[in-house]
Length: 183
Length: 187
Image 1 (spheres, one colour):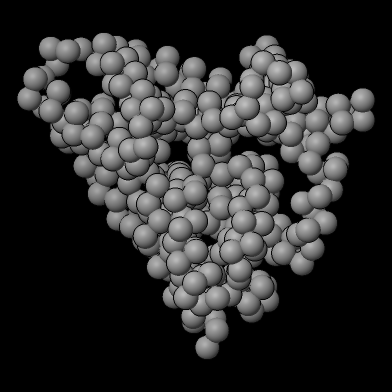
Image 2 (cartoon, chains in turn green, cyan):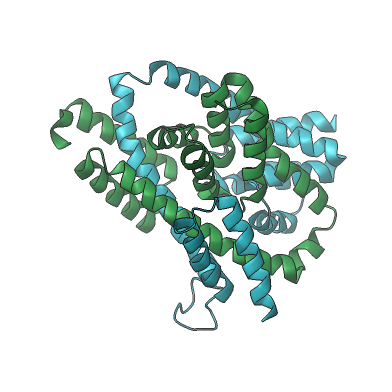
């Protein structure tokens, strides 16, 4: 179990160090809540990300709302939301007064380049282990869908939400009508 | 009432920016730059690049930046809350329904389709991030050594070792990346 205080501190820390937006925060959350603490199952984490995608707004905020709700109900969701928006709120409030200097500072630039390298390693490794876990169940179906979604996402400009809705429908058709024969 | 205007503007942006990330930019351009004229297009471009260097999603960063500029820190807080409120409410309903009915067959079937798709979407994001980490200009010649971003490649390699061999947590790995980046800039 996790206390409100721990939930706040963990989420705050994750939000404070995760740069670049988008999916970059997801592997870090997964590392903390799935790998380190074992509070959430890997499968369940992917479910949460899928739900997070189905609402408007940034995936980072949406995923932490759901993690908070999953672990501690409505109050947990309020805590994780607050903990997620607080670091950018503080940092941007400060930066907005002297953002030109910030943007051109060579040390900050150098640190950010290095951090970007680390984040790409973290994401690559997370994709590998999430992919391996996903392929354990319904391997043929999962592998085929993974490849198709990847290719569509890479070569077309289809919006993410369209790919997600289509994948959900594919799952519904394949397992609802054609049953587990694909498994 | 400037607080109310900020709140209402970012509430709309928060409610209609599906897809996350850069999907929010055209919304901000429409509501904040053109309608309210709180910031210029140039400032929007600045926020976008600052957003890459600071924690937090671009929508939150833009809300804070615009709010602070228009009405001080209080404005930043109001705009940011407005921005997350729609997805918060919607997600609580979705999560409530989902956790209550997650054992239903049809939801399980949908999720069987969603999980592999999410992995691929994260893989795509990882690739584009790696491109910008390893190359100064990912559109230019990738084999030219001038274009290769050495600190990005080195810190990615070292990070991978720390992740796999030493099971270091990701926050520690990101800190190591920052140190490597600064060290290499002095070489």
